[in-house]
Image 1 (tube, rainbow, N blue to C red):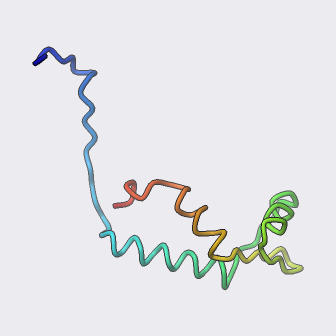
Image 2: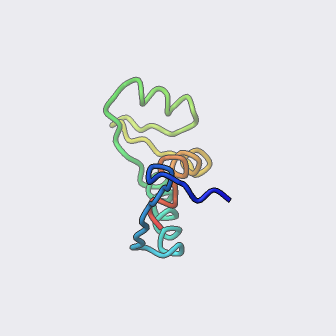
Length: 85
């Protein structure tokens, strides 16, 4: 067994948890509901076009509603859940 590890070979990553997994899931569900039912204004023409082409509904005032089946993978991939739990 090799006990001659350099300090750089040991990865220490402190963890600090503010939210329970249940709280994170509740926030996630609320985000999906807001994106699909309320939507958000998008001001960049190219982004509006891409979202429309992907299946989002776009109102005349640039209000984009993102359905859950599109939003869920995007929200989940935006930042690892471990960063919040």
